[in-house]
Amino acid sequence: MERHTEERLAARPSGTGRYRGSSVMKRAVALLHTDHVPTDFEALIQQHQLRIVYTVRTDTRAVLAALIAVQYALENLADAVVIPHLGSLEPDAPWWVVTEVTELITRTQVYPAGSALPTVLGEES
Image (cartoon, rainbow, N blue to C red):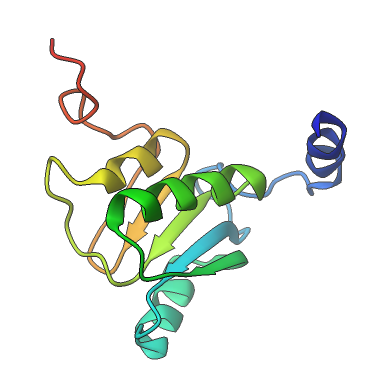
């Protein structure tokens, strides 16, 4: 499995993703409900210059869906996870785990990678 990851890293064009000010499209994983609104999804893709590299369609519980999003973001070297049905996150929402690996884009906000609140993850200061 490591060999395949190394091959994907080597095959990934330089300059993709993670660089501020870059005009390169971000690699993104989409997590969609079966009843998502396609025009809202397309608007997010255009607004944030996303290239969808993997799409998950699921109506599962939020905790499981967040873990699924993380798994596919890691497997596909995604710079972002886009979830058009989400708005602002509550402090105890399971979606914060996504920001431990990559940027999270919802219909109302962008949560940068690493922006999870320490108390959300159970790390009291």
